[in-house]
Length: 219
Image 1 (cartoon, rainbow, N blue to C red):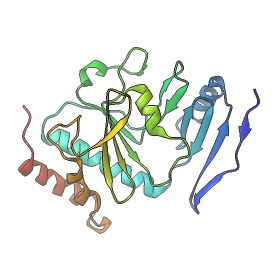
Image 2 (cartoon, rainbow, N blue to C red):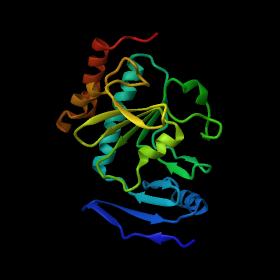
Image 3 (cartoon, rainbow, N blue to C red):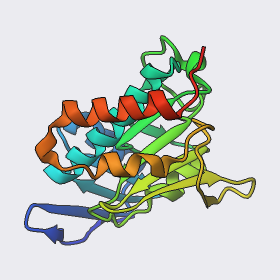
């Protein structure tokens, strides 16, 4: 089998990806080891491998959404495990992916204290957040479906969508969250879209105040 490489796919002047095909699992794992903690996302799906360095706008959106989720969980006293862009991989599925943000909520106790998540023995995250402003060539959502991630949020810079995994292994759009059943994720949108001029602290405090007034307290 001979690996093939496409030219870099230019998204804009600050963002591009490289896609390689017919890449072995051994090469994928070697790249993970070589890249380490560098800010390059690696997606692998049955021999197709994509590398993309996230641009600053992408990272900004993901931190905003992640911050809103985390403030809500703290305000409502909801146990959670935050694993950010942890690499999740399944050699038996020939799939590997790095979410923008991910959370264990319902199954938080199952991974509490686990330093190295292994999907052979541990469940996938309850919620994955993807900021899709660069449009990867490889579909990450199909990888999450194969791994059994129950819920994915997708933000494209304007719209926040919620998807639930159904019994057929397909994602279906929904207006409510599974990880947070009392929440309509669209409620986050006005706070995501607040002007950056107000500062991050003001954004998060405004959201915290909204949560305290509008969402039920957990005990």
